[in-house]
Image (cartoon, rainbow, N blue to C red; front, top):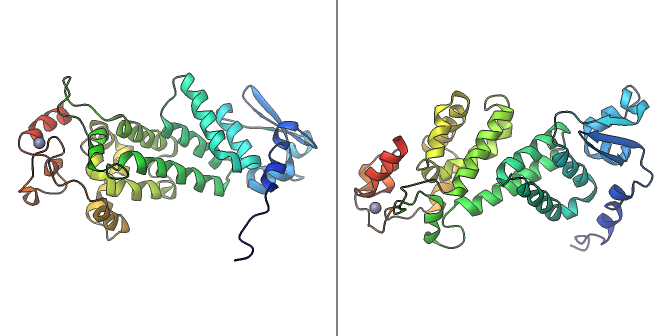
Length: 291
Ligand SMILES: [Zn+2]
């Protein structure tokens, strides 16, 4: 493939124009922030900007575009992505670090905010990209066998040996809070497309999710229960690739709470978290889940 390699420097020529304001012809404002940007670049990425910059809209005459109902810190990153997507890792990392200093440390809720803003501007490639990085991160943090073997299980399921009693692993709690946050913004039933990949992601992970207390909470609320019921039906009833993935997941065969070897798990129904625990560990977990 002689044409596979991209000419170097292309991305880097465009990127700085975000900061230099050179040849800018549109002011974009969000909350207390504003930027001098370029109609042609914004319109190339976003149908919303394209419409606003066309003759019939007032923005075309005033040269001012006001972003409503978005967090200015998030909006800034989305605008920058239209100029310097090649630097996405640094843009996201800086955003996460800045928000962490303000006590916002759940990466999933930040991704959901970025997704919401990209959705506001209808930037299809950015929506796909955010989904991609978020689910890749979740895959690495929720799947106990992803990189370091079965020992990682203790980080994603409740630790039954903990002196203060079982509690949710942070990885799972953050993930579930992110789902709840997304459903709060978009509504589980409004546009299924938004949640389709998340559903297919959750389905094979269900055994891990359903032994956490936060997942139980997600089942109790009417709107979020719609989402969880879809995950359950995908996992247990669907002729879906999610079910094939489940076989690949290869969950540990022993008890998730101790090293006990499970011999009669096949007698227990797969919808029951009891399937993954021995007769000593299961009552402890059950009491915690229902308390
Ligand atoms: Zn056990």
